[in-house]
Length: 380
Picture 1 (cartoon, rainbow, N blue to C red):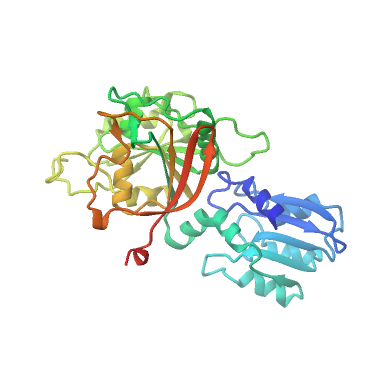
Picture 2 (picture 1 turned 45 degrees about the horizontal axis):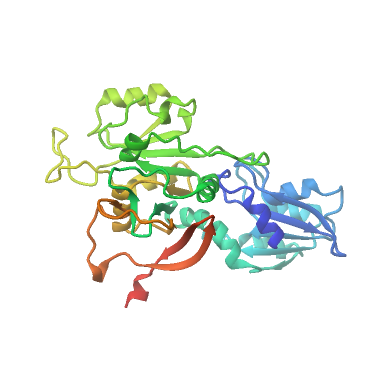
């Protein structure tokens, strides 16, 4: 099953809206026959890829280890349950049950009815960690959001002059590239684009990766970003999504973005808008972040990696939209005048966002803290 999980991770970031799944076929005497994974939506599922990689007839009487319950419905591909039964697989060992209530347990029942032995729950927790983005979208209609931030020991993201490149070292930046590869969408705010003009593209993608390209999305309520930004001019504008408000953004700017090849999605403002497009009782424009994330999920996105600045990060925390905080801490001090990591929104101590530390890892000299939001029950 660990080999199947390793195979599943090869598809992360390329299978939207399908889950990354891995499978391993083993002979009755314990020999490894084949390995497969789901590489791209519309392509063969992990079980089918595994069966095709095996020698002809080798699946009869064999055991297949798969990280997610085999599908039992027909979509762009046929049901994996039928393929496994037809191939003569004797036993199916599975890690996780499908989270979709309409499908959960159905595949297992079909296999058992056909005389196939089924074992459930092997390395379930490890599998569910890989499948968490798929499960969240399937059950809530929202993507799983990881907020990535980098700061100094004293909580600064830029020095007193506004310089932020580079707080972390090359090993930490390489890990960020790995995080981008596993995400469906990299999300930033307009301020980050205006300040840094980033590309947000995946780099150093392994040759074995054959999945969908990553998407990049920017929140820009009023059309601040010019069409000359790298998001539109680097030859990959088709991978750019602009989340804006048609009531607040000038129509000519929207046409410029679309002419460059980007996709523009209309998102409602976070605050009431007057008849002339003015915000009622609010000076700064803002978009409904929950609606923005749901719009990305509607496009198939399961995992979103936010690399925005303090304003967007603080807003996401304030609205309880962060599923995981990936915080890189560099061993340096920026001192007076530095920009705070979450300095855009004041939080009161009794109700401040709190997190539980899940893991720590060193990348060169930089420490990566992975944290999950503390549940409301844990605070009581």
